[in-house]
Structure formats: structure tokens, C-alpha cells
Amino acid sequence: DIADNRPNAALFLKSRATALGACDAFISHSWHDDPGLKWKALQSWRAKFVAQHGREPLVWIDKCCLDQTNLDLDVRCLPIFMSGCNQLVVLFGPTYLKRLWCVVELF
Image (cartoon, rainbow, N blue to C red; front, side, top):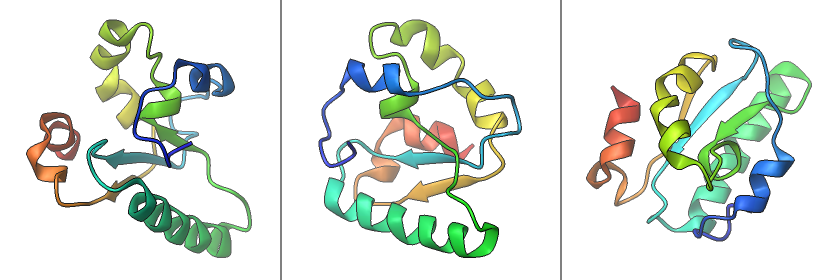
């Protein structure tokens, strides 16, 4: 549910663990940017991925993959989560470079 910029701890229960290197993309975005525009950009990337690979992508997105009830632990693991993904997909919006975590993800 990327259409809502509020954390939703229930989404974590719908995620699943995967091996490092098995995740197709780490989705980087600012929670403060327009969710509709981010969804449109994500769907555009997804369509290209499906056309190229013939399957849906396996993605890491913070809203679903970070345990919102245990952020202290999960945020410290962010570099590991990122390194386990094959590519970085940036949903760049007007606040992206103003958000510290977004800048950290770029580096």
C-alpha cells in the first residue's frame, strides 16, 4: 500500500525473507513525496522489468520490509538489505535529496 505514506506494521507480516542476492531491487524513496507519482514510477519500472525478465520482480521496500515495531534493529541492517539487492531503483521526487536516509541509501 504505497498509496498511503503512513507506516503500517501489518505490511511487514506480508513480507518474506529471501537470500542475499535474490532480491531484484531495493526501492529507495522519500515518504514525503507524492505517493501517486511514486506508484506510477514504480509501475513503469515494474513493466520494463517484466518485459525483460518474463516475471514479476522481487523487491525490497521499507514500508513492507522494515519491521515498523522494531525500527532500531532493522534500520541498522539497512546496508545489508541494500547489498542483498541486485539493483537500486530510486523513486526521485522533490523531497528525496532533503531526506537523510535517502542520501545515505545513495551512498
